[in-house]
Image (cartoon, rainbow, N blue to C red; front, side):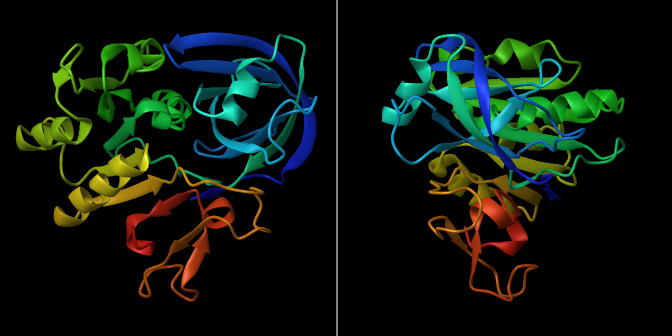
Amino acid sequence: MVAAPSAASVIALVEEHRPVGPDAFLLQLALPQLPDSLAPGVFAMLSPEDGSGPEIARPFSLYDCPGPNQVSFLIQTLGCGTRALAALPPGSAVRCTFPLGNGFQVAAAERTVVMVAGGVGSAPFLLYAQKRVALGAGANTHFFFGARSGERLYDRQAFASLAICSHFATDDGSLGFAGNVLAAVEAALADNTIPAEALFLACGPAGLLHGFASFARARKLDAWLSLETYMGCGYGVCNACPVPTEAAGALGAWPYARTCTDGPVFSLRDIQF
């Protein structure tokens, strides 16, 4: 894990909304300043400054840094918080507490990396993939991205345009592998497209992550998860995002870890999940 630089609560301005599927969009914000380096997997707490959203801000993983002092977030429109963000026109003010949490350590170039994502769980991996390409490690960086249908492989073109190995899977067979993303990973392990000794990273809805955790433990994979846990504050005060720890793991001195400050990225060895 890589700890985020000290967070600040600032006013960001909406620069762009870009639809990337039937129920998702990219929200691009301009911030007063960005840290020099941001780890994939750090997140922000976002809420409309005009009060149109719920009182509690919502957490979103950093998706991209498209330009100087610019950040973007991949958001699926699900409830009142995301609908409020989706309704903001360009120029609107957003309260942004950022950067928060511990992100992924980008593996050395010689290590094969396998990223597994479902839906908006792809969010931490665009920046990770960009950093791997910058290391000259695109050829041994694999991205497995699954969804119900091709139209819900949100912004897949951004990944397909990078010099990495992208593998798409759809439940309805409309694009790529016909089946869920874990089945696609299992098939790639079976035919030696990817080695079992790779570093495996996963992010997505709870069902996918629980399935991936069981899959990884059964095969003794070196696996890390970015948890999509509901949070109240994002910086460790409310204790609303606990995850049980493994007594023998690095966090085992306490029975629970806080997803927002100890994570959201965890080694599977360190948590009960």
